[in-house]
Amino acid sequence: MYHSLVKILAAAKLLARSQGATAVEIAENLGIDRRSAYRTIEALEELGYPVAEDERQPHRYRLMEGYGSWKWWVPVPSLSFDVEDAIILDWLFDSVSHVSPLADKALSLRKKLTLIGAATGAALEPKEGGAGKSKHSRILIEAPLVAKRLSPDSKVTVDSLLAAISKKKICEVSYEARESGEIKTYEIHPLALFESEGGLYCFVLVPRYESIRILAIERIRELVPSDIPFTTPKDFDAEKRLSDPFGFIQDDPIPIIVRFSEDQAPYVKDRDWPESYHFEEDADGRLLMSFESGGIFGLKRWVLSWGNDAEILEPAWLREELRSELATMVGKYESHEYGKGGKDD
Image (cartoon, rainbow, N blue to C red; front, side, top):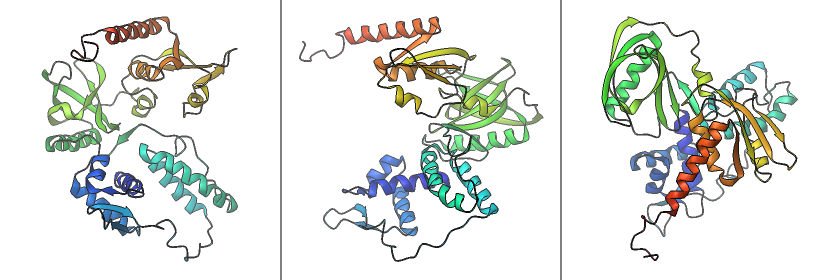
């Protein structure tokens, strides 16, 4: 349901532009086929937002002018919330907050309702873990729609995994390694299916290695469920593993200090960070961010994305690792191997 709403909102934004949009443009932007694009337009019209085809440009559509005010004559009803209303609204907002594209909009809407709620004694302000705290990953209990296209076999795999997770049944998996392409078959205990950045993944315990690993659904070549039960490790917490801002690819957590330039400090500090993250300014107005994280791979990519405005101070080995990687990058750009036949030749 939420993923359909995301598509409708995205299509509405495209159609509200001065140039409107074609079904092809909507399909490309939403990652769907053309038929689904037309169905999304129809869904928007069913909600009471008429869409018109441009007379001068066939197959190009726009939201009709005044779409935001054509119901101006309908009087705004007198609103009041009782306890049941507040609980239902809290549940709805918290549910929507787990869908990344809707989290910010849900927070904005919740803020708009705060004054109305306050007047009737209902607390609708953002709550920890609710709409005020966006998440990039979410645990799944039913098959979702995702950005990556899944084969029919992968969809069957998802259903089998969800059943095995629910019933805590051991499975045998044939899995293709990303680096080598080699397919290995081994026993797994499927613990939790989750969605992250449009992809589907599963936390599994691999008895052979006595460790919890992450499998990408699209690289599962075969999954054979059994009737043999397993016990979930007591220290396994899927939500906690997914709460690290730097991704679910985790090593052991380590203390980290990153320094940001004075210009970028406000943009970094205003982001939604876990409570355990600490911020302070140095004598030059630069921001020092101290925290613990096991998402080293994601952290390195994130720090590099800030360019000269971010610098890892601690630990020393990670600082050296990043320095070495930057030196390699500089060497690539200094090389003249690329662009043979260009203006330099």
